[in-house]
Image (cartoon, rainbow, N blue to C red; front, side, top):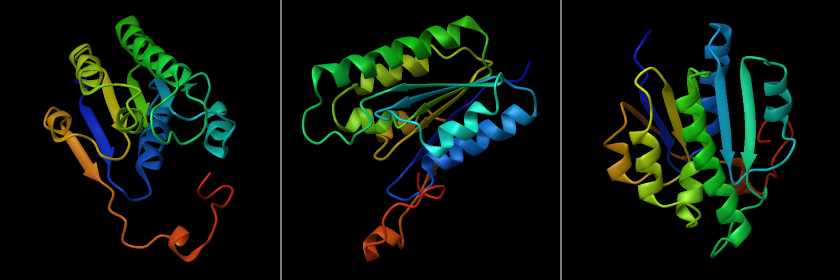
Length: 172
């Protein structure tokens, strides 16, 4: 059994979720079992459709309303995020999965749906053999210090800046 590490993909650039999903694809190809919990997100995006094709190795659950949270999150959004944390801890303890991805967990943190101590608790409960991947903008340095790998995606140029809308199959 190999040692599982903690990975973080953060920053204001595009590619955090894509990097985590690339890892899921590689892990699935190696016969590993992957659980992806998507915070904030809800919907049948192209990535979700593709991940369904990787069953039974990949399982995805969404914990959100599917919209960007501006200001204070609603009680329902907080409840969804807390349920996501509970599920991730339970899933890691269950031993069925080799890789657990908490996609956009730092966005849930940024809007106040979860706290830094919630994420630290998730990290503390990670079994030694599970790879834990956390994504989202603005990962706190206190959490990044606990990770084995931290990658920051930095925006240099983005099509949105020129008014180009999100394109199906590319951005969603």
